[in-house]
Length: 220
Image (cartoon, rainbow, N blue to C red; front, top):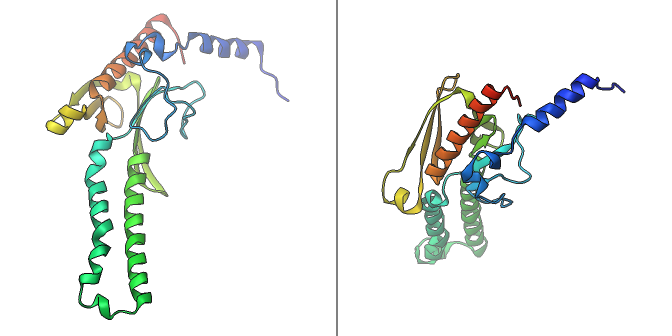
């Protein structure tokens, strides 16, 4: 077994000591308890959350999804089509079908409706925006076999703006956070996320901490 040299052990320990917890520099997240809920759109300091490219010393400080109110439209559509089969007996041709055909038609209807609603739920659940103490990450879920991931380092962020337009955005406190970066991904957009002002404040806290690390010579 290969042993670590004393210098590498010291280096690893130094990284651990110098890497401050987000509560030490972000008043917004310091006031928020760690989140252990799975089905939520605003998860500060989420427990048991990791992603594929996460570095060993990288910590997730905020996980976001689109506000649930933005999903109401398709839920109402699903509920409407869920009661449509109740009108089948009133169709002239339906009464001439054998009972097995009627049951089969109803089964196929609800199977298709379930597939449609499950796909939209997965899109909401797996389309996530992640803030770590090192990066901002936008995961666009396309299917179970395909997703697009856009990421930028915190120190590449040049500008942060938030937009809340319309009654729904104001009343339910959700909006879009636009992140301009100097990297390959020049803009990362967090769409319809809860508490856009809080998200912007956390991003600013991460930027300030990144500057402090550079000034103080601390590393991740």
